[in-house]
Image 1 (cartoon, helix red, strand yellow):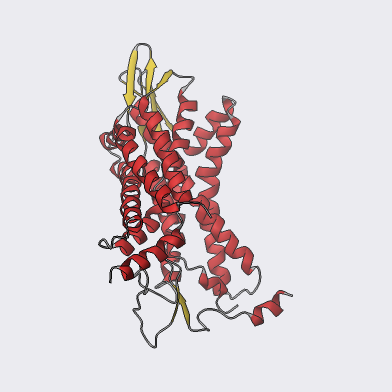
Image 2 (cartoon, one colour):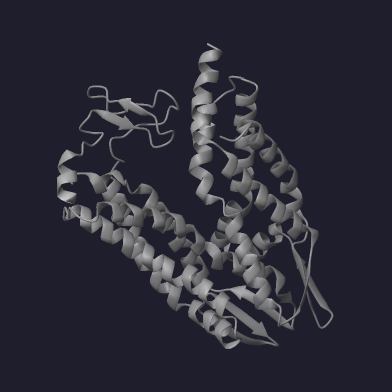
Length: 168
Length: 209
């Protein structure tokens, strides 16, 4: 049994939230060929898909890489805070259930593999330089994975029930 | 040996128990209450997921139909000095093999071709085995379903590769990469197979066994 599992998850979800915005808006990498340069962040991936008319693919990427990972961290932070401070906040059960159901739709780790594959694809065609966004993205991914590894879902469910009965 | 074990087994349903699929609390089944809610987490409880088999079949057939355009149509178009070259998933893998990147070729082959097909065929096999009331390989079928559910989402890999490449390779007249129709079909395949494994109720495997 790990020590302080709730605190760990709480701190990890908070740290993840701090790195979320930089991971989305800072450039992931820059492509350089014959003096022409193009850099892109996560939001620009989505807008590039919209610009080329692939709205559905754009929405899928937006949700799996941005919206759902953010929601997961927010929900985990909210529920962990409530359990840690024994506060009977609204909708704890529904929020945690929503977190569990969304879990598999957050695809940061798959996206990371996608980034690696495209680096290998592009490395012969042009010069690639890595942006600070990539660093933040890797941190966000690692923290999200650690948070779901430390998360003790069984304990959370029984704690949610305790919190409810403790506060009447 | 396995038959003897089967006879001794009691399902939760026969014991009058209900398992909450969200928080895994085991509750006793009330009389005739069709729309029960879990006393701990408030989720709707079902003995079996509503219309599980019909919904899973519908989603599997959808995936199977979408697999054809996803694999046969080009997934992205590379334009180099005004010359357009559409690429299907398989052609993308061939490029990697030609340039000696065997490891990446294998990863893409698994994620984009093998896993979607294995997933659709695998769940169809499990569904057929339930409808035909096959009594064997129960544990193996459950394990197979878990593996399918775990690896299924990794098929999204190609979509992220396209997103990164389309945004980066946008160098005016020199070279651009744009998505091609199969990208949409492929994303739809991954989503519908993931939904198919969510609507499927693993408890059905053990029913009538």
